[in-house]
Image (cartoon, rainbow, N blue to C red; front, top):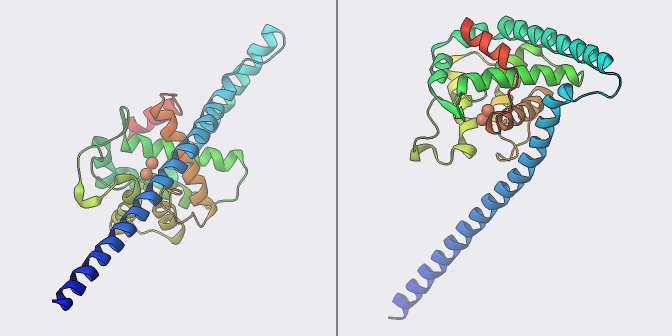
Length: 240
Ligand SMILES: [Fe+2]
Ligand SMILES: [Fe+2]
């Protein structure tokens, strides 16, 4: 009788312990989501200033202002064409691969497909590396950025087997990309860690840190509908 009582007390203690562990896990996840909200606000401000700074009216006489704007616009277009060439030089095989083509049928944000998003993120990665004059392996930067969301399913449909998309898709994308392409360590790190801080492991390489930021800037622009790199993305879509 005493044994049975002890057994049921032990069982109850075990259940309480499991409940505590579960509560801690849920609290940790909520904390990570809160931090993500704060991070998103900061990124939204950056995205707005990153793509709007060229459009702000300068002080000074009207004609000077117009000339300066025309020069800036021409420079921006020249830069974007340079990024497009780098993207095609290092990422052409990826763009034409069946898995990447499949991304055209999956929506990422709003009306933007995962394919368009990945191309846009790659252009932003290249622009950030140039803007901050960072020494990077350009080939890895292009390939890791193109493949960062290579999870290959529609995340808007329920997929109980993959868990919470935001927390799990980086790992799935990395496994799929390793299966279909020959990746170096930088490219693997970029894909696996692009969801930092939602995924806890921080990016290891400069290329991974750039991708982390580029992905958030592009996603914010897509969500709040700031057009970015629109012309070049359209040209690339027509080409591949
Ligand atoms: Fe992602
Ligand atoms: Fe992404």
